[in-house]
Length: 184
Image 1 (tube, rainbow, N blue to C red):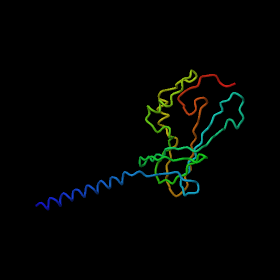
Image 2: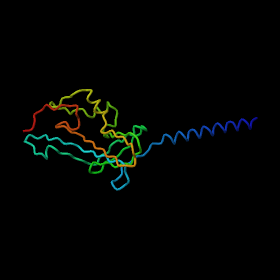
Image 3: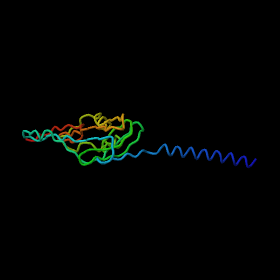
C-alpha cells in the first residue's frame, strides 16, 4: 500500500514538472534585433524628421524641405504575439529587420512610460508664450504609434516610411501653442 502511494505521488509530481516546463518555454520572448544592410532582411523601415523653417526672412526652397535622420532607438511591437523589442536605426534613419508574417507597430522610445509620467515629462516649460492646447491631445499623442505595418509575405522585401514632424518653437510636442513674437 505504501509503495502504491509513493508511485502515485511521484506520477503527479512528474506531470506537474512537465507542465511548468511547457509554460516556461511558451512564455519566452522572441528577440528581434536590428540588422545591417548586408545581412539578410525582409523589412526596411525608413524614419526621418521634418524640421520646419522657423526664421523670419523669406526662406529658400532648401530651408522649407529640411529633413534630418539619425541613429535612434524605437520600440517594435509585435501586435500578433503581444511582444516588444527595442530596435535601432542606422545613421541614415533606416532599420533593417527580418520579421515573421504578422502585424507590427513602431513606437518612439520616449513614449514607453505610463501616461501620467509622459504628460508630466512633456509639459511646456514656464513661458508666457507657450499655451497648453488640449488635455486630450496629450492622450492622443502618447497613444499614437509612429507606424503600423503588416508582413504578409516574408520572402520579399517590405519597405515602409515614416516621418516625424517637429513644430516651430514647440519641437515634437503638438499639444502646446506658441503665441509669442515671431522672428523678424
